[in-house]
Image (cartoon, helix red, strand yellow):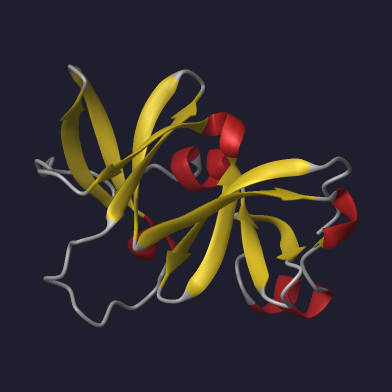
Length: 151
């Protein structure tokens, strides 16, 4: 991956199946409990449907489906929804849990390893963050995840 983070960033950190992910806090509008979602016929496979957030119809995306993560308990929908804004459009992302908001220095972010570039679809990844406690988190490219391939 050629692109790498060159300045410190603040991230909202969340988990999906015990893997840590992060999104830029500047794109996050709010974090809410999972609520009622109305399915929409013909929507892409990863779109769960729409919900009413503060009087505005908001598309809800299941990140596990989008990332191809197999789910052990399909009926368990106790997750949280992170409402983000992409091009002034609110979109809800279903996650297992929001963990924290943290500041990550630019030197703690690395490009995706070359071996992964040839073996998986990495277009959703901006980089890999190294946390002080040794854990890693995947920094998500929200624009690509939420608008790329919406057909």
